[in-house]
Length: 291
Image (cartoon, rainbow, N blue to C red; front, side, top):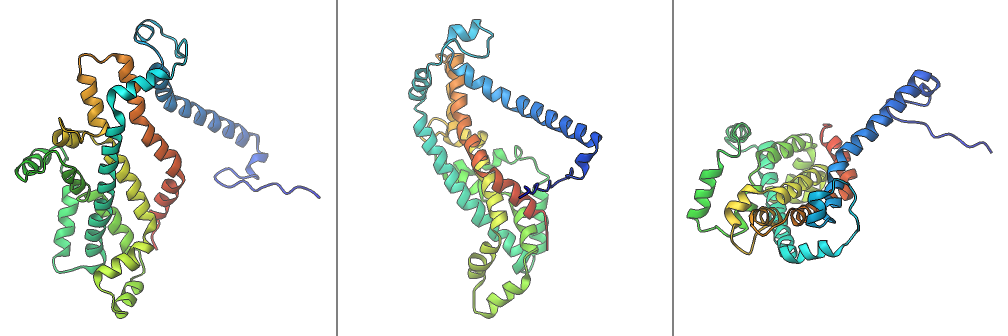
């Protein structure tokens, strides 16, 4: 029985492969993709390899690979930084930021896109206007308000800041406007309150946008530095990024220890990308399609 050849999907199809020019173009595309991947991953690979080197070898040798792979140096830096505590702090920041980002931004977009109360257009324009304001401009008054409320040295300001993201509100609003309004009307006829409609009807139908915003929120909460540095500096609640900066400013820190600390800070985002890359690409495409 003859084996059926799988049809090629995409820009270049099986029919196009009959042309020599298409084959050459495909080879060139593959070569460019490999070059881009190598260039993109080389800095990460270099940092990991540099972490295995002792200070003398790091300062003298220009070789990419270390003379020997001694994993105890990473263990030593892990203990020196007490990085597990900072990982735990970053986890709390991420969980609180994720909850506030999905609920608060989602509810605001739900009100603007579906409930449309009196004055919702003004609120919508104010949200859009905040996208024109650089985040650094609002940092000083935000820090003053946090200090005045006695919330310094706490995760709460970081959680609330994630729950007031205009970009996420715009994403939610665009997706909610594409939902069938008949389902919302049916829930009202069945006696659901606006809150019940949001949690029992809108949220289940909006899984793609909730996944996209969740990934963006987790990545932003992990990599955020300036606001956590101002609020958590000097406390036991320092996140990984804050601890990495403080560690780099200490006079007793060597360059090789700093390289290993950078590797520790890269591990969670890299794992997050490899785990959720399929969901991210698929749901971004879904979010961009209305109807």
